[in-house]
Amino acid sequence: MADQRIRVLIIDDVPETRENLKKLLMFEHDIEVVGAAATAEEGIRLVRDLQPDVVLLDINLPRMSGISAVEQIMEVAPLTQVVMMSVQSDADYLRRAMLAGARDFLPKPFSADELVATVRRVYRMRRPPPVLPPPGSLGPGVGRGAQGKVVAVYSPKGGVGTTLIAVNLAVALQKPGRRVVLIDASLPFGDVGVFLNLQGPRNIADLALMGEMDPEAFTLSLVSHASGLKVLLAPPRPELAEYVTADAMKRILNMARTLFDIVVIDTTTQPTDTTLLILDEAEQIVLVVTPDVPTIKNARLFFDVITQLNYPPQKTLMILNKMDRRFGITAEMVEQALKHPVGAQIPWDEVTVLNSINKGSPLVAQRSKPIAQAILQLAGRVEEALFAPQEVEEVRKRGSR
Image (cartoon, rainbow, N blue to C red; front, side, top):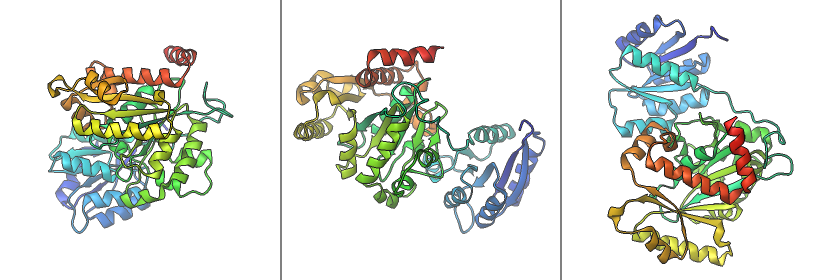
């Protein structure tokens, strides 16, 4: 409804702060403060009873920290958006808050304009579970009898930027007339939700625990990104990752293929049965390599393994991430060492990458940046590998209408 007000709950142990926040919000025609609490326990009870749209939560509370409180809030009110407040504004606090499920972070002191703008912004992010059209209505490549394409983003070595590539590749592949889902299988410590500033009540472990899986259950487990991308998040706790077995992943991929044109999967470096299943199922493996000797050594071992598995050479698209001429290793040197062509080179831009991660905003949104242009070119290479030229052109035409 057009006259619906944003219902806000305040949780802060300082009485003056609670009153000041009420005063800052009381004159906003579209915002209503529905309650206030001095402790996390009291606040969680109010959240359960009132189901507010937005919670303003102090990160330092007696007996229970705000980080712990937000996790419990997500359990009793999954659609409530939490804004953490703290006098400490360093990156570690921000990351911990986002991992716990917070939508935004306000460093104290903040102005009335900053507060109001934040409340309105996170409220706009409050979306119901995504609803997908029935099979057969999603365009070419998707529907009854059709199978979507699986793209596995993988590296045999950690710290090379696999999640960064997977997230931005998925966003770049999401276009009008095409449905793309990103699955966080970088278990047990998946970070896709942090990279996209997303959280949700369900995750991949919930699906894995289902004996039977239907399209509705799969759809309800996804969260939506502003780009139109759908995301299946990693479990919020590492111990839940053990439920995502190879058999469970097989069921998840089978369902994802029936609902989406492209399934992008962020994988872990560990050669588990689940990871090997993903690599087997993928039409395209995007192998992320960085220009350093240890990573190149691990990549050589990877090529030895897939040769034994009889993967065709064209199944693997090798890319060089964090490229910088100062490192002294060129693409030609890597190609010679690994006997495999380099399909794309992603330049190293530390400032842009860190800003993107900390803000939860994809790099490809900054199209003027060379690193964004390189990832968009990578997406084009993946499209060419997955689809016939006429299919790619049809999607582009629908997107330009």
